[in-house]
Image (tube, rainbow, N blue to C red):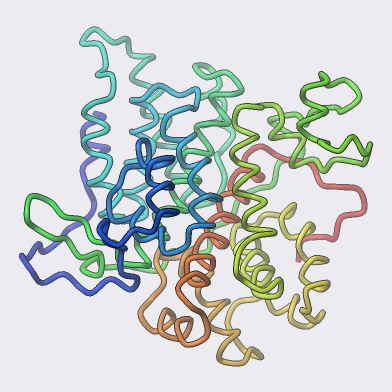
Length: 387
């Protein structure tokens, strides 16, 4: 049965030499700066040195912010190599990411093959992993039944790693799809622009009333966990999202690097960043995300009316530049790619580094929204209600 679940849903016309021009041109290895060469040495061994990394090297600070967590997912999580690659390939299939599909085929083949005498329960866990990927893609949420089924075979760290693997791959799929990263296959080049895309329906889920992953209680935490959550020893309150992720310290550290990059180091203005976060959080129906970022959006310059506009369909009331930003988040959610017209509108107001940050910000907070919904991270006191 499993082999049928991984049959590609992608139908391509592969033509030699007729690939679409990438929207962002990868940097040739012969043109690397010393900094870029060092980044390849640091991160390329796990991530790979294909066109995706060479495209990201346009923005070295982004590489430093994104690849530590990407490489954790690829090689350091608690999942077996086989389960990791099955989740990545299923997500690539759902997101119609030709590049990731072909990049990970050899990795799946190289992962530990299943025992020929594998029990039915072992087969079922792989089928359940596919269900989890399907549900996260459709509803930004893993259903109670699927979560219970996974919990029969996975401990808490493995459950967290499985959800993050799907969510992280979703972020990367939207990025490589949108910049038209080329994939060379034995002399053939498969253009991502050949993929057909159909907008998905509105995807609803029922919010959890009780956490599936309980946040760490700081007063009861080990000194190591307290230092990780509050490095300065300030004694400040720690948000539930961080205390939840701290249940898995090995995951927490590289994920925090990604989070801090998006929030504090990207090239986007605070206003643009919060527009993208609020829109994708609303589309994912993430009440926690909305409550955290609606006040941040106002502090960054969004008016009350604009915050409300981010929580309704369509683009009425936005100027052309802002409408393109909101539309980009919608298209990544609906289609896992930014359309040609929207990309052109973004390209008129952003440089290459900012374009990459648009993709990572939207995809990164889609990832977080999926996780918050699925783990049931509890709302902070006096949170702003979801619209």
